[in-house]
Length: 351
Ligand code: 1HN
Image 1 (cartoon, helix red, strand yellow):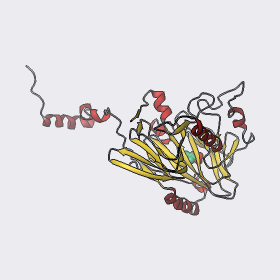
Image 2 (cartoon, rainbow, N blue to C red):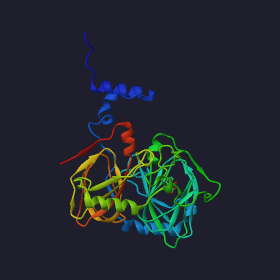
Image 3 (cartoon, rainbow, N blue to C red):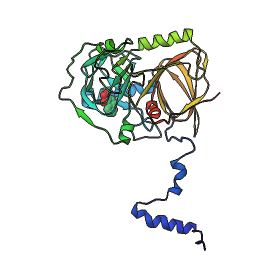
């Protein structure tokens, strides 16, 4: 004869009795563990530069770059406060360096990108080579390379930092080390890595100095901008993305860094984009122009009116569509290379 069906009370008793033994019933959490579609705890959010800038300025008054090591205001997702995260896997912040300052040399297993937002003439040094920053430049710091920043120009420089910090924290794989020298010794002239890898050519011997990470430190905006504007003149418009390119590691054709994918897109004047969603949540930095992003989140629709230097985040699997009456250029980054490596990347383009 079958045992009588356990009552709700017996079940509760079971849970309570086994809990001290660190046992928990799967059937109570199964649906949350394997949701029918992604349900990110991350919220869409917009940081208007005009609102952020006064706080950056004040940060510049209360702490030096050297004291802070890195003088950064973290863009914290409003639904993930306290986690130093803009999505579950990504970190973003706005870093300020004033004329004459140095952000001292260190290295870590986290990979970093810099996207220059305001000001020109500061430098970042990576692996013995300096590169000068200009607005719209996309600069990378491969994992475990010494890097320091300095500003020998006459104006403050602000850039967006994007790192894979939450991802590396998830894997408990973070290491870091301070350099003995504040500014690393420069051993190559500026532009050396670009000369070797930035012209659709590569050294005949000794490739891949940084493993899976791109040997190019600076992808200058002048080049990216020209590419997008030429596309606008002579290729069909993508109804979802406008004209969008991904940055590549020239040695592999893959993403510039193993964990971070980066993109730049031009939405032409009058653009009315179709909606799409992707499993990779993405962070946007507005380079030029203005427009609107409409995002469908589980807690409702949001509308972000953006202009140059604003930042916003589109969480995983939330649909987004763009409008731009006057045209704009958007930089974005996400963890897409990891999704692709794991075979879990999905995109849905709605018509
Ligand atoms: C870092 O090394 C930089 O090098 C910026 O500029 C932001 C956030 C957390 C950990 C390391 C940089 C960072 C960071």
